[in-house]
Image 1 (cartoon, rainbow, N blue to C red):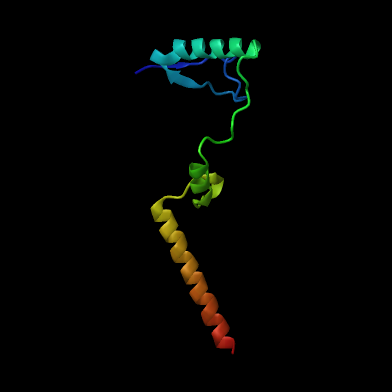
Image 2: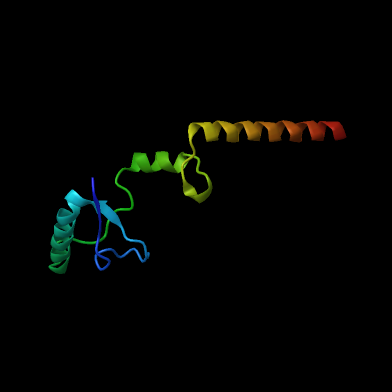
Length: 100
């Protein structure tokens, strides 16, 4: 399957790298963007979007542990993190009991 870069005037990411899209979807993407711009121009649709669609999914995502860069941790990474916390707690309890 071929990938086609979107024109730079269409993509407003501010990055120098081109954004590649599926070649079969390229013309439809441009057509949909033009239609959306036309409706916005006539004030038929508003640009304001809700920050998230589903409250329950948002709450679930907010509870999930994240790693550096904000990415969600895998189950293995979570288990390793919990194991390290337990080891730190055990070391901290042993050190305080030795001093007494």
